Image (cartoon, rainbow over all chains, first blue to last red):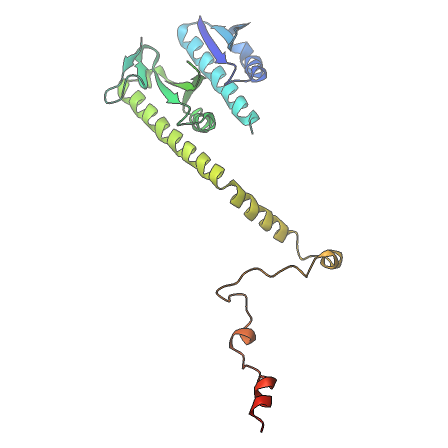
Amino acid sequence: MRELRFHRDLYRGEDVDAALKVYARFADFERAEADDAWVVRVRARGAARERAVAGELANYALGLTIRGRG
Amino acid sequence: MTSPVAGVPSSLVEVDLDDAAVQLRIDESIYPLEAAYSAAFTFIDRCFVFLDRPQEGALRVVLSTKDPAEGGEEALRALVGEFANELLACAWRGRITRDNRATIEAVTMQAMAGALGPPSLDELEEFDFTEEPFEDPLGIAMSWEEKYGKKKPDPDEDAEGEP
């Protein structure tokens, strides 16, 4: 299981959610909220797949956040 | 487990060879968040990029190779070095834009106004031609005749010469 903490100052929650929808079919995700971050736990078949999906998810969320800032 | 990179302060850069990742700590007072975003955006096609804020005023960028097999120490060192260069370029570009915002906006507005075409008769009618002309110390705006034309004889001088 791999955990990603998307800091609220740096990522928009709606962009993290949008990324989760895109990658929903590639892994199992568990979403939680911390005081300072959106927490996403990634579970997939094998560590390599977990790493790849988590990385692509993070990139997607980052890309959306940056584009959303104009 | 993270370890320092040769030739770089460990407080700034650390590698995690197990995860084929390298992390860079950024001082936001030197590299604004917008510069970090700009640099990160250019790297998301070649590696995984993750931003974090370990404390107020600081950012952490984690770069991971998409293929773990390509995440050796030298490759990660090169990756973070390139990112640092891009970060510097983005910060500099941001500063130039900020410092010259007024000039850029003025030039852009003039270009757009020019693209709209010549003024209409109604706009000319509303224009205030009594405005003071701009200063022209080098005489660039003077017409040829004004600058080099013959001087007309002064009628007062002729009157003085007469007996």
